[in-house]
Length: 187
Image (cartoon, rainbow, N blue to C red; front, side):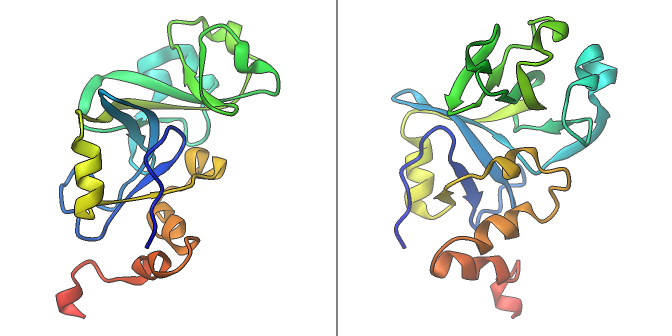
């Protein structure tokens, strides 16, 4: 099984053997990978907390469901906004490109300045982070599969089946893992 090297814009899909409660069955969008480590957000952990209750006007701009997503176990009191720039909006105020039109939006930017520059937006409380060499070690240990992302993975309204759907569309043996029971010994 050939895996991609981790890069911004790719997904980390938790292997069935990864039992860390922060990441069981998670799908992580990588936002930054460099010599100091990696950073991403968990795409399939919506909370019950409406964005409007925490970030006011941003509640009118975010994608359905209009709730905060649990981006990961690090800095859960902070928020990261992942956005899809409108065509030509990649240079908009507060927008930092991750890959193509996908990027991070600075939430200190007044929401009214964003209207028309962003097609889609999702806000995450916290993030997943890895120090120098940590993510590579976890990938080599088999904790994560590194696979291509689709825009719909990032902005999907119902994320309950995201883990299985991402695995199912992968080539070869990787697709087989989507049907694997949580505890293979019970099979």
